[in-house]
Length: 261
Image 1 (spheres, rainbow, N blue to C red):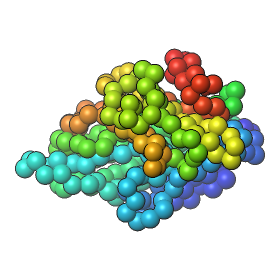
Image 2 (spheres, rainbow, N blue to C red):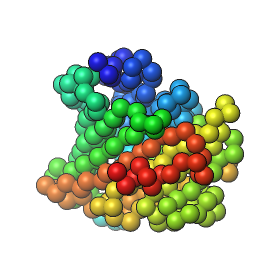
Image 3 (cartoon, rainbow, N blue to C red):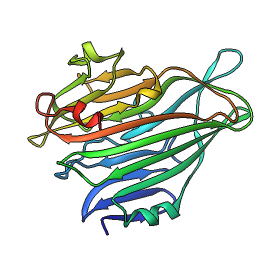
């Protein structure tokens, strides 16, 4: 057995590989969006920050946000989950596989409509000290069109790091150059306990143009932001990402090498 689910309750799933912690996936009703925290590097360093306060500015850990909904009058309001269900059968089958899979379905009540977010997270065996997370999001409106706006996409809230820096696929480095730019991928790295670590978010090209929101001065935060979406009934909208958790920095780790595979 390669992967072990240490806990599978109605609130969280904790995953380990060969006795080493990998991540915990939170999906209780008390959170606005399901998220992963802590997530570990190959040498056991935690690279995510969790829920610190009730009204913190960023979503915790590694988290996909459906943004906010716009009504017919142009007003926006935040979306909160109604319930998240986990496919326990897929969990059981994944324990003896070389790729562990988590599939969750989150239902959001949006005014007089319903939005379904099915999230699939694939966790292959660790490779060359790089943890890969392949994520697929499927958004579906059940009865009426839903217009999603604001911060739609996959975000990373970083643990406190020294010498924190963001970068993108266009060789831009630092918050001033990376923030609010469109690129193939974005990364955030720094020093934790004398170890260089980093996280890269690589949206699939089929997602369309992705703008990266990057903060590396006062906090560590990275968001792969998707433009506004209209989700029509019976038409799924799919967004896919590859996330890399690596040891190294902007000059010693090649994000492009793993993104192209």
